[in-house]
Length: 207
Ligand code: 0O2
Image 1 (cartoon, rainbow, N blue to C red):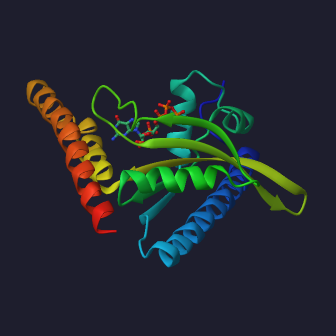
Image 2 (cartoon, rainbow, N blue to C red; image 1 turned 30 degrees about the vertical axis):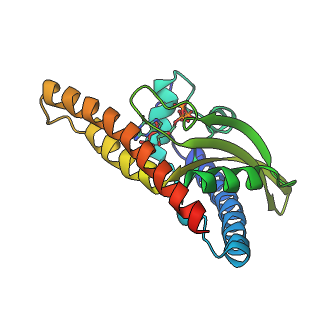
Image 3 (tube, rainbow, N blue to C red; image 1 turned 135 degrees about the horizontal axis):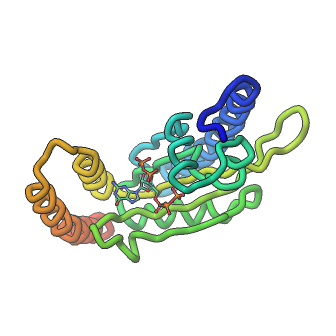
């Protein structure tokens, strides 16, 4: 079999990317609209900032290989839900659930999967709310239902995940030191959860 894209498949991949990028734009516009409305009504911005990314062709093929799936365009369409990725960084945990729940109720999009690593953090301490939405992207031939992975997290969760991600991909550190750092990060995760909870209480009390 083949282990990369060639010729016609490259053109097809470019078309696929264009649809995913449209889906990402649909969802980020919805998020910006919600943020604006909330700001006007509550004098508070639930969203600190939004990051969008399209998975590179290299990591897409890497993921198909890792899962033993065929290296084909249809296999991407059927099996991968994170080609389009949006990260919504909120100020407080309450904002995370407010924004996520409000978006999930919108009638033109569908919730495909939810993984709540805030209520159930990963053993390493990772916290975030992951939702996969399906959104129709309207092209000349009609609607293309397209999945987008949205990671909702607070500033503190994002701060933690960035450092953990860097440590995970650092191979130059000695194994023992790495393990020690992972242990420390696990403690940091629960301390950060405690701190943001206390700060949220202040935020709610001062209104
Ligand atoms: P990268 O390098 O960020 O792109 P799925 O990807 O949905 O098919 P899975 O593993 O069930 O498979 O998805 P899950 O658990 O929803 O997590 C996927 C993404 O969440 C990851 O993407 C990361 O961005 C983030 N994530 C999950 N766990 C961790 C963690 O322990 N630490 C950090 N820093 N990020 C995490 P990728 O593609 O795996 O990685």
